[in-house]
Length: 195
Image 1 (spheres, rainbow, N blue to C red):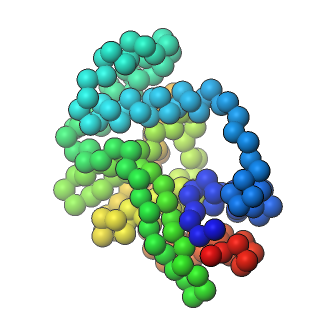
Image 2 (image 1 turned 45 degrees about the vertical axis):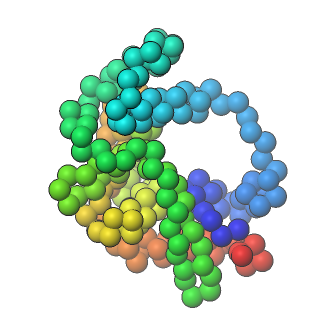
């Protein structure tokens, strides 16, 4: 196991045993999570909108509360500058290493907004946004990876709650601290599981 997502790192940080059961032994069984499916639909429609697709027919197939959430979201000021969104639903895989091992960080940016030399990673949350975004593990991983992808430290991550329209953000601070935190979590995994 040498590829880590934010979710897998969060689980490893919480419980090595649960991480091994889910990501190595594959003992986790998928459950039908309606809230997650709803979030996926809304993420997908926002992505289609940013890519310039006509989403009116798809919108008409949504249930009323989903349609209202989507319309409310697309009225946010950031969408008035739609042309500055350079990517949507963009996957990444970043190679990292410490003294002992090589590993990869993987994930997907919901949307990337470029304003001159500044990059803003947008992350749509179905409900709750991080209360302390500067210390949130997703911020750490995404800011670190975005700085590598765009070769700049001029990166911000913004979380937007689709429910409340609330927003919080974290600015890029220190690459070394980000990497130390990530490696500190990975080192909780017994060495026999690291490829």
